Length: 286
Length: 302
Image (cartoon, rainbow over all chains, first blue to last red; front, side, top):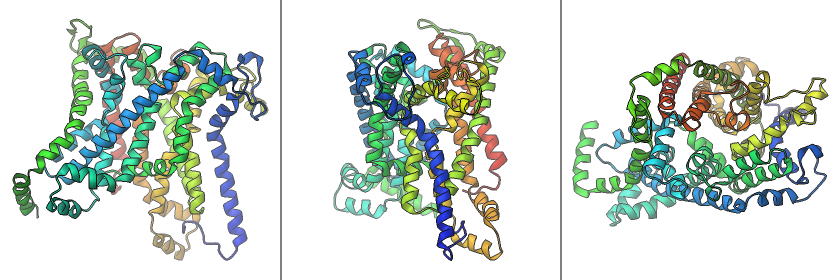
């Protein structure tokens, strides 16, 4: 890059400069990654109370006792993971399909009220969630009486405005001629969407799926509000309960934290490209 | 151009009937939006004028608002929120900016690696991170952070347990959290600056700092504004860490507006007051966003 002086005259200078930069970057990376490192390392310690042990920053001991301790804490601990998985998967699939559909309609089909409706949708992104929280709780728990169900956890997130916006932004760049010619061939809009638009929008739909899944997996407050029994809780709530009820069990708590975070780490390392793309796709304003 | 376009548009709408498909496609999104966003917003307005009870609420006019504005704790929570925002958002922006600048000259592969490394902490949930930080802030001398400052000869602190350090503890957590998102956005903006600007500057004999000052900073102004506004808006709503780590204490030193509203609603079940406070929060956020656009957005082109 030309912001930096071109030092190709002296490769040694260039290498020294790059070395120094990488050193600084690594230093800060260490600081931000430290909590995660600390968590994973400590999770392999003995399942004893904190007073009896010492913190260690080096992997000296390797035992899965703490994991066992965490899972033994509640008979539902495996179910928490299952609950999280169900909720996140449903929210993800529904967002990909319905936000995708809405995004397609808003970007490529002309209909009366299109711009007005879209502007109304966008207004939602400016409202803090504290505003909707109380009425939403009353609606779902008192009016619909859906407390403690998957439906209660899933429904408010079925389609998010952000995802509609994301889909619309991406799909408006698909050439309209493709759609026109498909129509000439006798394709109806339903087929056009599933056979042409969806395959062409793979990237944005993948980004959307991953980010939505992650958000849903990590979400904490809404499940906290609408569940009231151990068997319906998600892993995030389970971890929080564990932390309040076994305050001194250091290693098991770290094991629990690792369990809650591990699926996301696996997802991140296998689909890293989409995570990083998602940031820039989402930041484009329209 | 607009005239003929609307004509064919009307003709087509009648002819091929795709508008029906369009309404079908947006139906689910609209219903979900109407039910879980639009209705709650309207409802929040109504509730804010009520003394809410599950069976038969009574209208009490502006009492909830008056109550809130008289409430010392509300103002304290606003002050806490502002303190937290001022301490975190600009620092986090600066960190992201510096790191993006540093990543820029590296090779593509190394760039991607660092982007991933800095993004990684963001995929762990807030609960996970709060559990880990709770132990880092262990008040005993064996606590990780206490060991670290002990190394520099500072006495061990009760990080989350005293009002002097509890806010700082939450701020430090934010500084050392993931900056991946803003780094990636900054980097994308940096890569978008055309080389010819730098070349012209070099012909004029500009050094690195001058190029940074006269080319990079003006070009990144829209990006910075975007990150600043979204950062401040986000920070005004944030309360998860306070909720999970300090519960707002000690002595409400870390009670943010978001947490206050949450407690009013779901701890004391004062729905009316919580709704009024959330609407006041909306007004505050909108005002701040507007001021930022007015103050910094004058010569920003989109």
